[in-house]
Length: 237
Image (cartoon, rainbow, N blue to C red; front, side):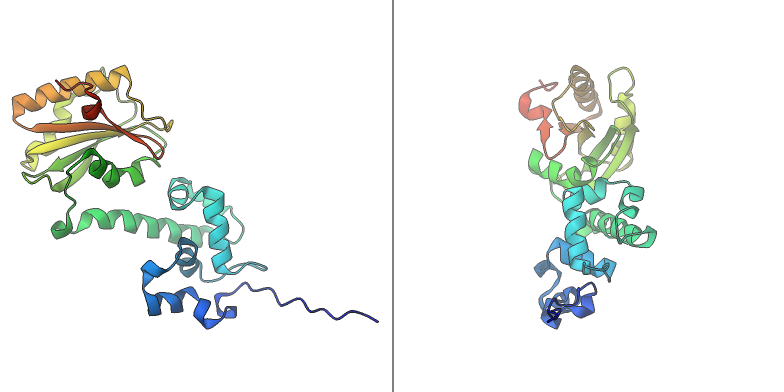
C-alpha cells in the first residue's frame, strides 16, 4: 500500500501565510515597530522563492550578512547574487536602508543634540562602520550642541602630512558653527588611534582655538566600537 503524501505544500508567498502572520497586515494593525527585521525586509521583497516565504528569505539574508549593518555594508552586486534576489530587490533593500540613515539628519526640529562621545558615535557609526575606505567627517554644532550638518572633508588615508587643517573648518565658518567634532573611521574595524590620528588632533585643536571654534572631540569609528581621543587625553591639552 502506497503511503499518501501528508507533507504540506511549501509556503513561499506571503499570501500563503495565515493572515495574522503576514507582515503587511501586522504592520497595519500593530505599526512598523512591532515587526522583526526579517518581516520588514519581507515587505520589500513581497515574494519569496520555492520552499521559502519572503520572511524566511529575509531571515536568510540577515544571517548571511550579519544583520542590517551587514546588508548596509555589502556591495549591491553581492546582494543581487543571493538566491531569490536580483537587481530590483537588492536596490529596494539598499534604498530603504539609506532612507533610514537620511531620516536622522533631515528634520531640523528633530536635530540630534550631542552631549557625550556616545551621542556622536551613535550619529555616525551606523554608516561609517560600513565604509571600505577611510573617511574623515566633521559634525557641525550650534551653541546648544545641536547638529547643524555632517560634512565629509577627506576620503582616503587620514594622516598628518595630507590633512589640511583649514579644510576642516571651512564649513564650520560657513555655517557659523560654535563647535565641531571630527570623526573618521578605520576600515580594519580596530578603532585604536594611530600616532597620525593624535598628531592631526593636536593640530585641529590648536586651529580651533585661533578661530574661536571649540573642537569637542576627535573620534575613531571601528566595527561595533569607537574611541574618543578626548576621553583618552590624546591630542587635547
